Image (cartoon, rainbow, N blue to C red; front, side):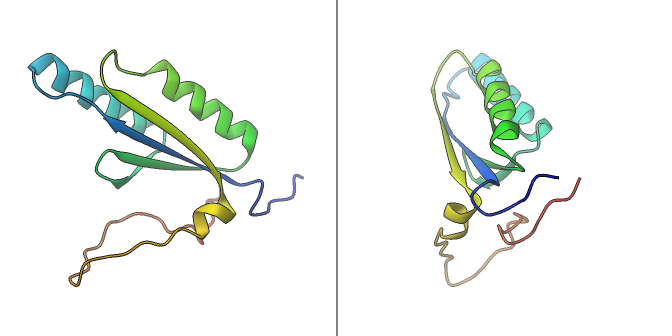
Length: 111
């Protein structure tokens, strides 16, 4: 069994800025977003989706899937970081904190 540690467990962040000027653009935006969610991504912030991956090999599978659903317009960035790096992220909230429903990095996904 592969040993899990904070340097093997990976996170993918998909950052995108897609046009929504026309109905066709909005449809492409919605389709891209739905496909990300279908592949296990959670909204981290508006236009930033994150996914936990158990290994680098698993991460490569999901990065390939994102590349396959890229919309024809706009900008999409894919950031790949280790669980250790993700855990060092500092997140700040306004004075009135809202529940985001996002899973913090210290929780482990079991399949």
